[in-house]
Picture 1 (tube, helix red, strand yellow):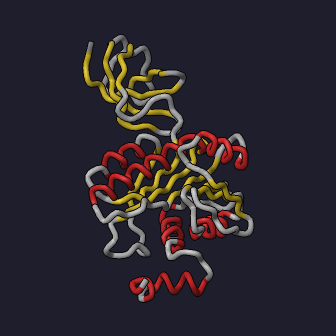
Picture 2: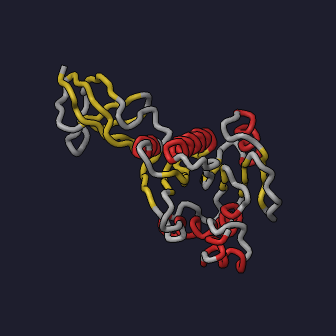
Picture 3: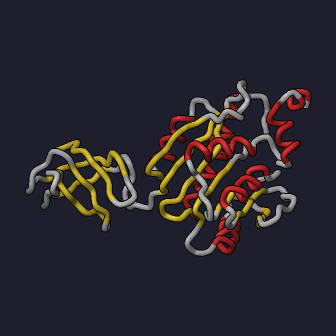
Length: 256
């Protein structure tokens, strides 16, 4: 508490009526990445005490839902759910509120209970962030946005890569409102991908057509994949290197 009392963001939150100094982290993240836009439907996972809910409501002015294992003190214009984000029942409750199309944005500033053992705390943070990503994949609209807090450590890169596999654009960012000594960092994923292929997937395919740029054009489960350096009639094994909302790019890893 003594540290908080010397913290300018702590006092700023008190003065301006926000429930947490973390509110300013979301303002700063959104200023840089435009995760939330006016009118967006936003779901905040692990939302208690509600600082990010206040900001999300202020920015979007739209439908905002908070989910937490703890009861969230009511916020005007915000709906809350007491539940576990890994539970299918909780997902059904969220979808019942936001509607069948899903949410425009999912955010998560949750942190595990800290033990003081950094290896354990980092692992718990990654597990919680994976749970948030898993929930986001169930409730986000195609093209939706995601922002989640995670602690840096050995497992950070693997989690970052997993977010990259599910979003067209992914960045890691430390907002100015984060304490200098904190190991927390935020991962922002924009344009949720619902394609039938993921980065790193491999396929054996026949090249039957070239596009206007000269790349091979193949269709996998109705989704267009462009393949570099191929000729019509070739049979090749490809690896998906990048995925966009409406198409993907792949490289040849073997000519068969």
